[in-house]
Length: 533
Image (tube, rainbow, N blue to C red):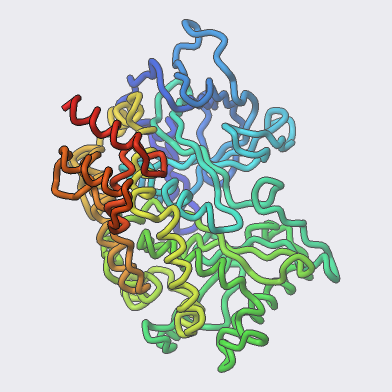
């Protein structure tokens, strides 16, 4: 049993585990895996949630389609994707405090931390150069793909969506399971390509990264209270709070703080105004409507109970580039039917209208702007059109299922899921805040798909979208549509060649060899099919 050290901080007791919260089963080893292998070495030091510690990291990745081997002595010469120093700490709110498997934040360094905090930008696993990374630790999300699924849904539509790579992690020689090595929402050439804000004039106007949500430090409070599902200010005892993430609040000058506070005030004042729908003086002047719309659609697709009110990240460029606020998606581990509280498993309601439920639980609440958006008929109509665009692209049923299957296959094809489950056994066991207690990985994936079928059907109805009928299936060579290929079908093709008039469906089926035209070759092709039968 690990020795627990309890430190007193005011009225809060902080428990630290010198063993760094290892899994119960410390005997798991990787023989070979399709996923990158990440080794972290802290040399027995205790990882902290607030202060970073010095560590070393090594990542082996032999390339897509190649196996990676845990025994580097028996398999020398493997490709090292990254090897070097990092500054490591724990990250996350509920994903840290409630989950046994802890997530991490790390910065890549050019030298050990004790020699100076010298950050070094590096590319990792095909992701662009940066020094700020996360290792997400899917635990309550037993599929381990919910975050990545949301990212793939959003990526074609939003200006920036984080990238992540499934991997398997060792810490001080102990196998810790499947993680997602992920970009964080931060400034950078390959992320949010924002200038640092200056002290005055145009340079003062950007760029800034903020979020709506809870944190240890409240940096700004909205002038406006949350509203109920009908848009009425009811919760006068509740506030909406913001955190300023970049620049770090403690590094911001008084001029920068004053500027971004006033920019948020102007945006919220526009939403609160009777003229909020006006394209010139209303909210469109201050927010990129399409960006907020895409954020909303992706979060509503997943019925993400943390949307709008927690980890709701938004940013602002300099005015000369774009004066409007834009959104970035983040944090979907409790989405796609994975949450039993706040109606998280529901498929038939709007997350954006659920303030009453959040009020009862004491959770952070949703800013009033989202009710103003859906009070604007133009926004509603454009959102309806955007949903239709998505449903005809990567949200088309077959493409969405293919995305899920591809992600799930990454986890299962070479035993990563089995190793993770050996380290962290959870099948058939309720883990906060699961709604559905799956009995196997396949069962969890089936649940996500079944849940999405219901959710998409409801959203189709709300957005007044009618999916096209799937093309009819028929046996190759069944030209006349009687359910079988026969000599009668040969006669139909011959009749078409002689000038016979038939409808489009028959003519499509008459192209038996699929060369986009009806010729004698279709007759010979069909006769050969019949002979082969």
